[in-house]
Length: 236
Image (cartoon, rainbow, N blue to C red; front, top):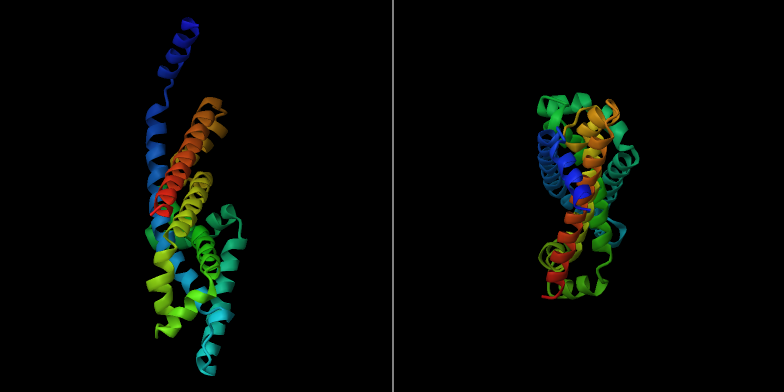
């Protein structure tokens, strides 16, 4: 038994791609973290706007109501359009725009814009659905106290839904990890790029298995951390 363990340990030590694996892991964490930050910054306001312009919360004034209807239709169309495009196709379509925005379509920097555009609409829909599940009595009570719908959302509803928002952010972060791996197909960097260049193009099964194992580990850590944080907030 000890001989087998010694052989396995020697094989692990002899693996020549550990520096590339370590850098790829850091690149994956960097692009996922930055993309998640921008996704929340864009998706949260978009989700709130979709909710406030939905049929339930449209103003009684005709001019304002018409503006809300057109805002909802336009924003909903953009969200549905971006969500309907497969991520790999979106990566290719956005190459010229990505080069214009960040100066390159390769590496960690080049992967962030398409990652954000792929996940921000998804997160916006999560936020909209989350707000729709809030009991209507909350809005009625706040309205009776003189608060507007926007004040109710930002001062009452969102602070009271931290745990649900964290769950949505956790789900979006896990989706981003998968998307970041797919970005390696066009040289997006990270573990996905290593899996394509070494695991697929060079038929190196060991590199493929190691990158998959690390991606699975990252997903498990993100999910576990999110669950623990949500449980802690729920008990407060």
